Length: 373
Image 1: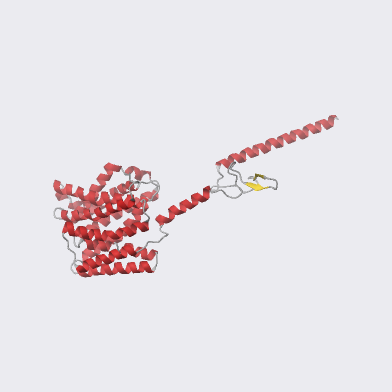
Image 2: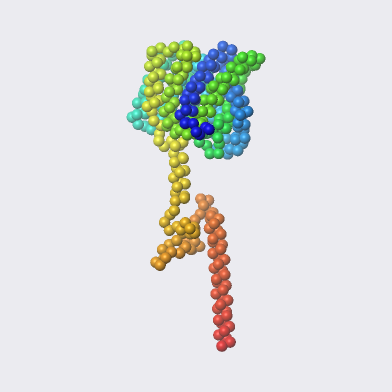
């Protein structure tokens, strides 16, 4: 079922819920502290993934590099959500969302130094300048956390893309394991703020709703989209997210932007839409390289007989197998000879020994006949 739906549909679902959940979280700030809401969101999402996917089994099967990847992603998720909630407690949701994409455009401009990306970066910087210039007085802490969240969001995209393409690991199982790790990381940061509301069923149910709409639905659909979209395509599509955040801020939170703020968000959207990620990004280069290596491995090469598996050379009147014992043998990358060549070599040597024995026996018979004569 997930593979039948177009990946763009998953992205649209993610775009809607990506900021709808945080908007509900802002409404929850009246009952729970900001850090407590961040803890509720991550902890509730971790419990949902634990019951649904049992992600510790996937984590146990991973090698060391895979476990390090999930540990890094889980830590980034925890700290990113804390910074994000502190920022949206002090700034409009659309402003935080616009700042969130500045590093994405900046990294693309550094990776692919083209006039197009330079223009995109200029537009994004101009938009963020308008946004910060409007509200910098009295909200310096909010902007500090907004920029910290932006850096972590760029790192989140990189790590999420790696998890989605990691061999032997389902992206959703990787997400579930990372969410459990994030719950451990965020507990000393915000768990203490939840203690006063543990007896408030409304606050706890609202926290579960925030987790579903913020960390389960958008992150799962992110993984389903990233698995089938190139990173450059995904990065282009995220340009609608600041606009989505602004609309949700107006509808849910009644955060009406000024004309300057609308101009700033529009410039950021234009910059994100205009930028292009490097064509040689890891997520796109490695599958292509694997396809090329696979084609080269299975392609017939000159002098190879596909019927017998032997290498042959021209011998005027025909062809005969190459003597692998005297020539160069095929080897694995670790220097060991393939098993089928080992068997062929053993059989060849046995045949040579048998021929040699028969020749020596025939020479002895000739000598005996000569002696009797």
